[in-house]
Length: 170
Image (cartoon, rainbow, N blue to C red; front, side, top):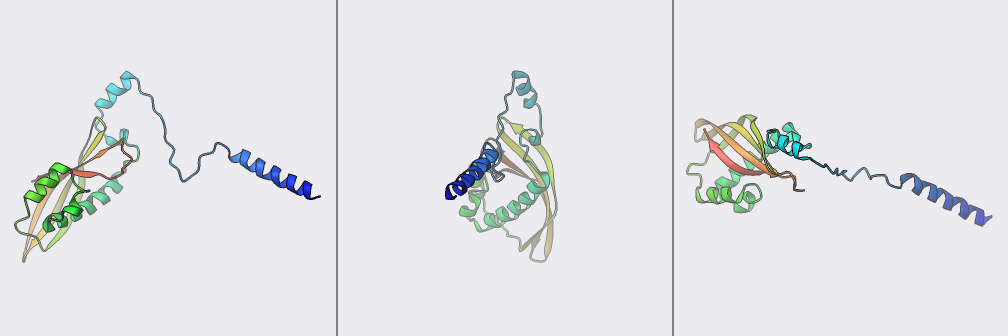
């Protein structure tokens, strides 16, 4: 009798294993291999939208992160906090920011508008330019400013973070 019970349990376990054999687990992202011919590569050189190369690119999610980065980078630049700036900005820009401290620090910053101005792809690097309009409060005076910050990311990298590459003030 116990042999039949053990045999029944073994059959159940074996059948369950057979059912799930080869299935992807839901918590692991599925990677796809894409083979491109010469014609596809030529077309992709002229496409300016990172969405075509970076299927996970979500503009609204990106803008939320860009807003947070904007405020974090401004505060770190004001404090000359190299530890905070280093993972957020490119090495060349880090050097520029550390060598050029902010002469007059605002007491408060209010973002009024954030929008994507331009997206482009150069080889494996996606660049997204974001326009930030904000009001900076100095003592009792409010000064409106507009900057265009360009973030970059290697789309082949497993690192999901974007790095600030360039700042253009208007």
